[in-house]
Picture: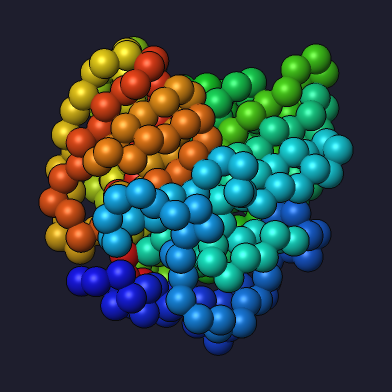
Length: 290
């Protein structure tokens, strides 16, 4: 599949937002929401040119959207809230990748979501979660939280600590099954299991390691020492891979990446990942067609 054909297939993702009223239920706070988007041409066109194949996209850290609300400092890889960029709509079913820092004692008040798989990965500090299903939980570094919003949920997230920041990734994935009964889950992982290997943190299967979602997606975290190299093989034909660098420098298929860079690649059976120095990264394999 050449690049323009791939981009045409990706266009369907914008159409969902233009045509569906289901997403109109999201809170109107200009912070934690997706706005209704016009159908505006092809997605995945890189702001920063990739130096390699036509079937890839490079998002440098400094080209992300940014919003500083005082209590919340957020970087958006894809269009979100007040950040709108028609070149940054989604990567396949991966719709939101927010890199958030929440100030001490602050957080998101109760707000709704529907028909989205929402994954939170704490990087530093902890976050208190409450929802209308009766769940009250604390998530911290090493945990992974998932919500299948389905027919609709309401939840809040707060950094109850008075003396430290909370940093976490919030990731939204289009589901492959709509209007499911909402569900919540979280797990605690042994972070040592990602040292010089890929630790699976999410899959489509409840019995697999990690949490599960309604989508043919697999997420892994790796923490590689300098010089470690490893291949990752695509689990499902037609899926692509988006790598987000948490710390350090990586080389993926001859593309150099630095901290907080994102790199997507598709139409491959496997990719080679090499740590140029001590590096930690999130690897997300997702369907490219919605």
